[in-house]
Image (cartoon, rainbow, N blue to C red):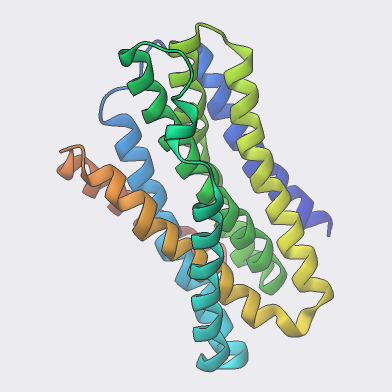
Length: 246
């Protein structure tokens, strides 16, 4: 349990650190967010297989694993469906320029919070399955959480002119990851017989978010080369951490 809390704290502090960086940066390059989200996609795609789906198959076989992947897709789909859309936010009395900016920020923050849920689950459940693989996942996800925290706080700082409220929102984004790390790990350590199913649920959830949220967003902004490079760096880093720490 202690290592589970430490891993959750690590990923939370990484996001908080990225949020604080927003105070010191005046602007984010046009390609910066795309690169960091593609990097995140590379990490998540590899981690979903090496730390979650393949260990689930090794423990229980393909039947439960396939069912868990489908359940993971369904869980995140329902969460995404239940969130308010950007139209709810932009009804506030703002000018057209501010509305467009707020709409973009809302979409970015929503996407990050949605994929913080399976990221946290991935760290917690993989930590229960194999501590070394769990730390490999936590380190890789923590690294990509830094630019994500920056992506949450910086646009809000620039739009509102305030500092600490956007930073606090970024911290809450990281805290959600901590909660799901501890909750996921604790649940499947107590109900150990459900561990293979939990691993595959987390893996399916991460694949869904990567394919549905990350890739469509980053490839629509015409930074294809930078986006592909970011994905490759994230993929290679996660593979390296998984093989050296396990």
